[in-house]
Image (tube, rainbow, N blue to C red):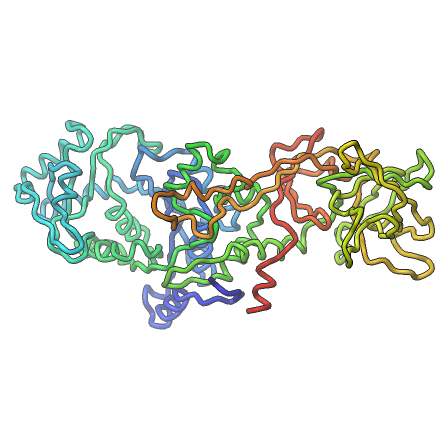
Length: 561
C-alpha cells in the first residue's frame, strides 16, 4: 500500500526540469489531456488531469483538452459535456486550447495517403479474426497477409473507395507495413484505419473511415506541438509505434515525446471503463452519477470536493510502477478538507424520543449554536430546545457495561449546548423495545455547563421533536467488499464482490435550519459524519448523502506507520 506523503515524488516533473535546463523545446512545456468521449471521467482520470494541467501551470506552459473522438459508434455529446464539466470542477481550464481528433481528419487522411504512396501502408482484406491469427503470439512471429504486396496503385484505389463508402464495415482496413516478425506485437503491421459507417457527433456523415487511436494520437500531439505526451503504463509498448509514425513524417511542425506513468489502482474500486459500463447498463448502480461510482460526477454528488481529490493526487505522487492505493487515504483527504469548511449541525439518524418531565409544556428556548467551534467567521444559528426531543437510539442503554458514558437509568449526560439531563424512566412496547425515555434536566446547566463545576463525560446530540424536519439520508458504503475486485478467484467476476449494503436509505430527524440548505452544500452532522445535499432534495424533504464518516482509519494507520 502507498504510505502517506504530502510531497510524494513525481518523476515526470524531474524529466521536465531536466529538459528545461538542457534547453529542449526552447524551454517550452506543452501537455494535453486526451479523454475518449465514450464514458464519464473517473478518479483515475483525476490523477491525469492534475498531472497534465498541474505541470503546465507550474512550468508556465499550456495544457490542451483534446477529445479522442475516433470511434463514432461509442461516443456521445453527453460525454463531451460531462468531461468538460469535470475538468472545470477539478479547478482547471484549457482556455482556448480545446481540440478534437476529428479536427484533424483531413490531415490524418492525407498523411495516410502519403504512407501508401511511399509503400509504407497497404489495404488488407483479411477479416478481423484472420488478422488476429496472422499476427502470431508472444512466442511465435506473425506472418504476412496475402494482401501485403498489393501495388501502390491498387492500395490507393481501395483506400479511396473505402473513403467513398463502397465497402461495408470490416471488409478492409489500412495497415502500416512494418514487420510481422517484430518482438513487439504492436509493431506487426498495426491497423491505421477501419471502416465505420456511423454518424459522428462532430463531422456528421462526412467520413465512413476512421483512424485508429495509435495513429491519431501521436500525430495530434505533433500538430499541437505537445512537448511531453503523458500516458499510463499500458501504452508503454505502443511508444515504439508512436515514434515510428512520427518518424515517417520529418516535416511535422513538432516532435513530441511519450512518457508513461503508473495508472491509479484504488482499493475496493474498479476503474476499468468496460466494467463501469457494465455496472451502468446492467443497472447495478443508478447511473454514471451514482454516488457509489468512482466517476468524478459520482464523487461530486456524494459530497467529495475537488480540493480533497487534488490533495489525494498530490499525496500519491507519480511513479513508474503500479501499486494499490488505499481508498482510506482518499477518505482521509476529504475529512481534512471538510473539517475546515463544513458547518456543524445536528441530525438524528435512528431516533428515540426523550421527554423532559420537569420542563414546562409548550415552552421553547432558542439557543445560539456556532456553525464551527474553531471558526467564528462561519457564524451561528438559533436551535430550538423543547420538552420533547430525539437522540440516537445507540446513545441509550438500559443495562450498560462499564465505561459507558452515554445515557442510561440514573446516569447524567450533557446535551450539546443545552442542559444536563438524567434518565428517570424508560417506556417500552410489548416487544421490549424502548419507545420513550423520560429524563429530568438541571436548569442550572444552561449552555451545557454546570454552575457548581461538576463534570459529565457523555455529550449527546439531539433535535427538538416539535421542530424536527424529516430528511432522507442515504448512507453510502464501498461498492465492493473485496479489496481488489479485479482479482477474483476462478469462476467469479468482479460483480460477485458487489457490496449488498453499499446503500442504506433512512429517514432522519434534522434541525430546522437545514430546511433552506442548498443543493451541493456540505455539512457535518455532529458525531456522525460529513454529508452533502443531493440534487433530489426538496424544501419539503431534504435529501442528504453521507460523503464519509468521522472515523479516520487512514490517520490511525499513518501514525502507526
